Length: 209
Image (cartoon, one colour):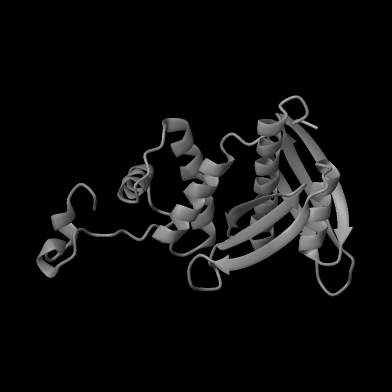
C-alpha cells in the first residue's frame, strides 16, 4: 500500500480534498508502515526507541482490532516519558472481584534492579498503589486519579492521570495501556519519577532516598 498506492486506491486522496491516505493500523501492520505512521504523526525515533515502540504497538494490536492514531500517540508518549526513569514497571498481576480484599503483585525495576512486592487494598487500584508504596516508600499524597478512554469501544486503551503532592510540590503524570490497572500503575510510577527528579534538582545528595 505504501509503495504502490495506485494498486489499492481508485482515486487520489488529493482529488477529494484529503491530503493523503491515513492507514488504520492492525496486528498485520509491519515495521515500515509503523515508521511511516510515526513520521505522519510527527515522531522521529532512534532505532532502539523505534524497536521498543513497535513491540508495544504489536502487543496492543494483538488486543485491539484496530489501532488508531490516538492509540499510537498515547503509546509513544508513554514510551518517551519512561525512557530515562529510575523506576519502571516490569510486571503486574491483580486479584479482584466481589471476594475481597483485592490483591496486587508487582515487580519493579528500580535503577536496574528488580524488586517484587504483594499488597492488599480497598479495591484493585488501592492494592496496586499500596504495592508501589511498599517498594518505593514515600510520603506523597494522591490528589487526583482520573481515567478516560483514548478511543471508542470496549477494547479502547485507558489513559490514567495522577497528581501527587509532597512537601508543597505537586506533579502530574499519565500512563496508557489497554489494561486500566496497568495504566494506573504506570501513571503513579511516572508521578513518583517526576517527584524524584524534583528532589534531585533541590538536593542532589538525597534524591535517591
